[in-house]
Length: 438
Image (tube, rainbow, N blue to C red; front, side):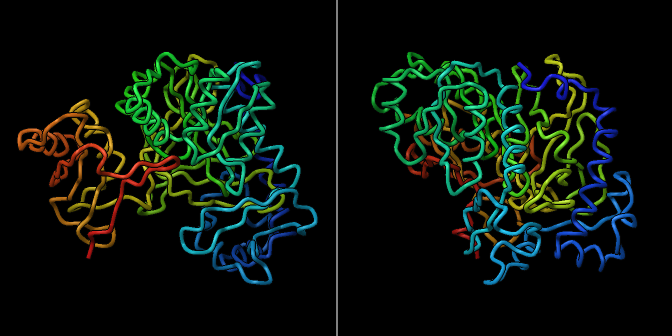
């Protein structure tokens, strides 16, 4: 089902004609209302919207970094100088988790919020949800931006059963008593629930859940993890991806599961760059790079060429579902990337390789670098949790090490531990652990 067929099936080659005037209008808006971009673009030699050029010229404009936005905050302006409306015009303020100590605030006007809901509605409709179905969700409505995606469930005609994170007993009681067809959670939590149920002798295949919508972290698109979840739950797994500063559920996977479709067309412009050089990467089938996003229609806190740090694989070949937008699969966060003797390595890629050894392994791993920072010397320490009742053996550790070497061209030191040793999460998992680094 397409939520907005006339938009979602528009030939992608014709999208530029729609986006061009929107981009020029947004540039005018930035110069008129954003102190941050007046200063930033002026310092780069662009003192008027006209001098910044057309959408084809966007590659000449400077990137926006998350740290720049943080640096522009003050007690007098807690959101930052990129806010472009008075607070009286803001209807909702979300925040990040504040991993650096101070949360970042993300304001929305009523028009901004409506665009977020439309984007999320396109994304979840692509997954195949149907009006009248019941969905139980574990995403908290506040303070995090995932709460805005929950409004899309109502827009799609679903019966929404919000439970939130941190209460597995309450969640599973809702599944048992209310018989929802859909579960919305992170891949980590879906995995945690599968273990929780097994420990209690509960067969999840007998539950009412037919579809799991995962988001919030990479993993739902990894073949091994997806297969494991689908087998345990007896349900289809599709994933979505967004980024708080830009939009929630900006990408959503259709029933063909050939990557997540771009759901923010008309609202956001996408680019692909080489994360090391910043150079543009042609957006062709099989291309990889970092996503860079620009608002085409944002009032409260518009961003220009925002570096997401999401490293993706890209496709623009036709999809049988009829949607014409490009698709991506998230490989990992550029911020989490390690360089092991010249080889770029994402922790999620290590997990995907290790999961090939299921059920001898549980699917939970920890990459524990020896040194602080990006550059690492081999062998890279990787802790691998064993499957239920499986004994550690040098043979299994050696097989995993050889497979990582063959697939990822990295030497790893494998340490096998019993099931349950590594931590679980009811929200997002943490694969990269620098606690042993010096």
